[in-house]
Image 1: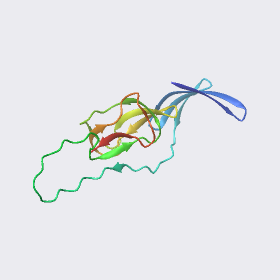
Image 2 (image 1 turned 45 degrees about the vertical axis):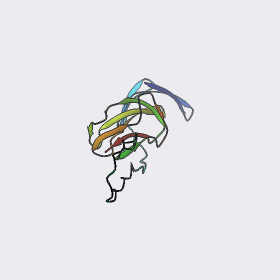
Image 3 (image 1 turned 60 degrees about the horizontal axis):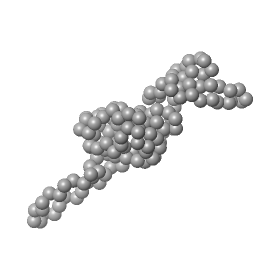
Image 4 (image 1 turned 90 degrees about the vertical axis):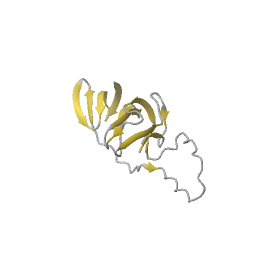
Length: 143
């Protein structure tokens, strides 16, 4: 998967990350295999909720306007770090529960699973496999 060389207190270590899922990683350090627990800094990132349009006042009925692309009500799930989209596990209309795997992206040379923050239905997918995204970019909308 990914190989790294570290020098710690003058001693060199060759590290190969073989797999990484959730908070467990399989690594080989100088030929010896280890399963390690990964602790991540908890970010206080809160989902951005799109405001709902105000109800129209009682007036003459209007013709319905077509919905604008990207004007979807719901929770906007955003990228916590810049990275590249590697795999998407859901489609528009899929039902998801909090903690379900939505997509996998590579950030800081590590594969990361992006999980649903809320229960709901996938309303919109804003990225495609291979896209490079910036921190804070909207990945999916869950309604």
